[in-house]
Image (cartoon, rainbow, N blue to C red; front, side, top):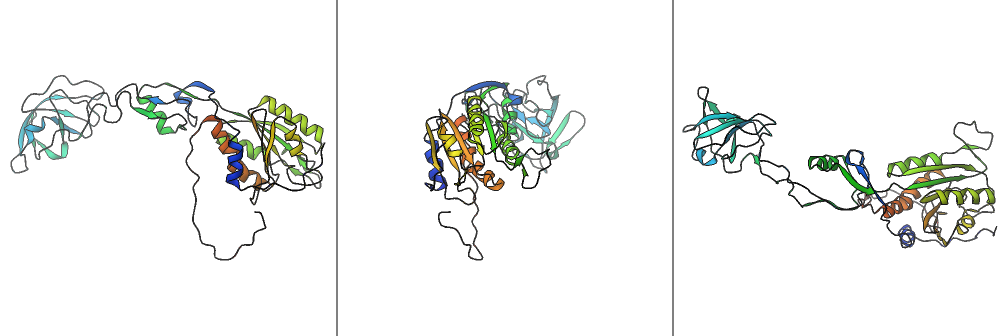
Length: 355
């Protein structure tokens, strides 16, 4: 084992991430899954509409389907009289087309009969007997009607490659009859925790010991990002043990996170372990960030490897800054920019040099 590095080659967080991502190409691995199971999955290909939506002209109001020209000039004082010749039942096609001076009773979402081009709201009509209504105002062609393909037309691009599927996306896809989609494969992310002071959560810590927090926090964040955490366990501050665990995790997973052991100290071995896993090894060791300065970013044998600080807050911050964007790159996910908030400090805050 080589001796610990005495100095960090510190980079800003954007610089550090850029250096890493230059060595992390987007992968094309994909799989087909049922649309109903595709929530939060990343599309591996563009999706175009296979059909018009809606597929028929639909009423947006309860009322009467009419020929708009039959209502021109209608007012409450001088209504237009129309014969009710049909009632359109939900889920059924109209029984007949409309002629001049005719209308059909229709509910919201009902299919317009041939010959009709507008809908008069029921509130703007008055029934005269059982088969005649007064239209109390004129309607324009297309009023209160959704046209065929008004939402989406056949062949329209609807969702791009890299889009992270939301509940509303799944609803739109099944409305078009898209029952399966091709998505990026979920990544396996190995988690290796190191430290003589760590014990399993179910174990009572002895004096000087603490429960392993980071493995479970990281696992939850990985699941949040749509991937599969693989916990390797807790390992002592022993180079050979950590190296074996890291190498096994690298062979079994797409990405590896080593938690703790990345501070420059006499017992620092994470950087040496990482460099021994494969080329090019550690690309960044030290980020001008607080918390999180001793972060290690590496690529070993074409797989990203991270050495995250042992402090739980530092671990979570550096995961969000570096691991999450890398997982997105690997799957081709297009995620919205991180939200920022502008604020004015009410007092001076001291900061250590380089952070």
